[in-house]
Length: 264
Length: 354
Image (tube, rainbow over all chains, first blue to last red; front, side, top):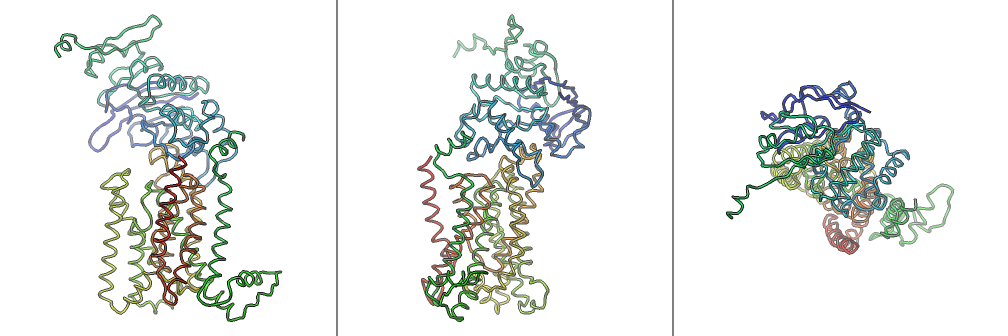
């Protein structure tokens, strides 16, 4: 299992600072969930860990700095699932998942039997056998999401970054996708960092939450600590009620001021 | 394995690995056909016998006179082989440009490569082509390459500066602008050097008709180098299909791959343009036809584009040789006439299977 240490990480696009001085230490096997309004810096943080944007500060994996690594070595350590992945419609699921093996194949090399075996294993584990030879363009939203996660798993990297993994999925498929990530995390000892919009699901699946606002981390801790009505009202500008279920689940429910709604 | 066979049975498509031998057979057949057809020369069926006769350990009585053999070997074969090299390189480069720019609309012509190479070649013609024979290396392909590379660089920089990486239309529009600019400059150079207009225009229409083995020798090294580099990138072109960000997250050096592929494809295109003139339609029709047939993996698209591009141009060259005998129909006209309906037919059948 692998730890991820971020110290003073900042990302700037031109003169605009998208992320300021972010410091955190993600323990091996932990699931850290980034929440916050649109443009808070969640994606920038994930992209800087994946090595896709220039950043200040230091990112260390198991103590050694990531910026010293080649792109290939970095990809062996960190798998990244973007917010809206590009799925070439006419590629079969198996062809798509094997792209995750790229970090292990030399520049001009080709996949070995071992690579294909890993791909077939992953497809089997994620219950995607039936789709292996189907074009990804013909799959449903939930199936596509599973194929994308399969590609990240085939990468066999100890750190998994997920940017809005449940975006565009219905509630059933949201749960399915997150259960899958959680199961894989337990089986493989993955360290997961994800950005999520659904606060209840974020609290339900992650070990720890971090609330970002305008590029700063404004609150962090367990779901019960971060998901408080006052905090959310301040940074999201929403009216919510927060319920604490007997099993410890924190449920965030939006509400309307009834007197205004009855006026309509 | 059972799932694989099931899926093949379900889809009804031939297995990928059979496509390459089939395309190789098609190319050999096209080569043979190209050697058999022509306005003058021996009866068609004697040609394969004569060719077999030349192979070691085989002795056949083909009944062909030395004069007829000269027609086959010195007139038809260079032309057929050159057509094959040109077709293969144009369609392979087209497939690679489409892959590396993730844009199905680009081909050597739309990116301005051909026009830039044409401008370079025109400059070589005006700076006294005959004087170049004393050079160790013929400057024509090299200057054409420089012209093509400058054109594609400008197209790419302008296209991405104003449209961002994801805009397919801006890249094509930039290519159109660069093509117009290069063509205008070419016209300007020609106007000031009217004595080479004839030479240049006959070259623009295609010089396959007067091809000799020395033309083949001239382009062969460039074609081998270019195609070698492009084939080496076939797996990486698959990785590039998920976009720059994700490819980079998968550990691919996106910029390096793009530059290497563009330089290699431009080298190949410029070299063949330098000997064959501007032949349109091949770089976009063949790779698209291949995609419709076998799907999207570049491991299949590249070799099949190469083989079928060669076959396509050999076959497209045949009507030009016999239709308007003794004058010739320019091959660019034939490729458009053959290519467009073929493409429409493929689009239609593909829709039917979905």
